Length: 460
Length: 63
Image (cartoon, rainbow over all chains, first blue to last red; front, side, top):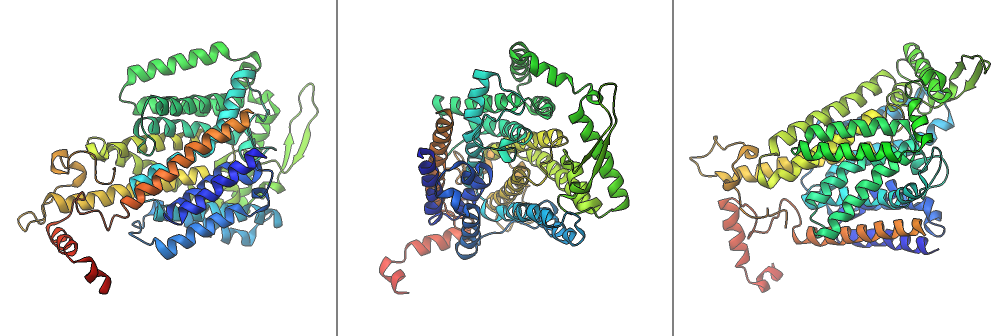
């Protein structure tokens, strides 16, 4: 009961504050989409279309009050909308009937909202607020799950978080991937947050969430989490400027994990190398083979949830006879997109991720040595690390249309547009006289002294 | 109990964030209208901003 009242208060706070600052409504939608209060509350919120109300309010407030300085139209910014349109077109030859429309209903909204977010998230305050809201939305699950894992040791299929069932954050594969994607964001916020006063307590709070995120991911006993954690560690190490310190922390964390991990955890992880003997892993391989064969004969895919028509013949061994299984899920984001949206959708998906990574790398390179934009370099490193986790873990979990990846892509567009706007303003400031026309230096390479000193005017 | 603690901590943190974000955002609204005291304005923009600030309040209301 208490949790329902608390969540209702938070929901109303988003709506109330949204009246004075429309972008808060978009953040409210991010919270609803990530935390899913309607699945956690026992009264009122569980009976309302909370996402629809917040989403409609966010878009309406933008259209009425907030249409300012839209982002430049680029491939990375437009692809979510293009993919949404293509997924709708693909419904024309969908093989899953009404079941396909169930997924289209939420996936279409996710993609369109991701395309919409850069229009409302423009300034540093707004970009940081979005990162904070995403982290806090996850923290609601991470804190209980992480603490329970520390106490009990966790376990495969054990739902220690808030969500019930085997979907959303209640599903181990999704939860572990989202938690690992949150780790670099928590690290970034522990160093650069401005909305919450930076002191020992808040710094420890962020680091606590960071540790609990990692513990939660490991506590799900998901093999994809181990792969994702490995990629995250390597990528963050590569992007780190204090490699000795970071390498030492990474080594200690690995040693602690190996020392404290239970026998059941080690046994489960060992099945990564012996996937032929593991039926769960074997089903995945068979489904992927089926998907490749299906797309070879249906290059445009089979629409959402097309896996429902697959028939998998598991080979038998000495103990088990051969078995036929029907409608097994893709268990991979890449095969999910390929099987559902065909080769055009898959190409679009890969191009979106690739251009986002390239864009973030360019952004980090351009802003790292510019003092007033150094936070952009750190955030782009964090977003890169998060997307790398998705690319690694997502290869074994079907989460291509879950909001998290698309929020990361939207934040990338917002960040890139922020740098473009600041650069445009700085270029005017550096030299606007007739002598300087046509030879204004590139703002990102402008020495710090040429710009207003002290905290930036947008950062106060 | 742990579930409630998780919701409570994350909700309080998030409420602080959105209240502070709304405050800051209203102080420095948009890119197009930065405060002339702090923002890197061009010479022409600065002249216009200074001229606008010298208009008496009663005249602004009237017209």
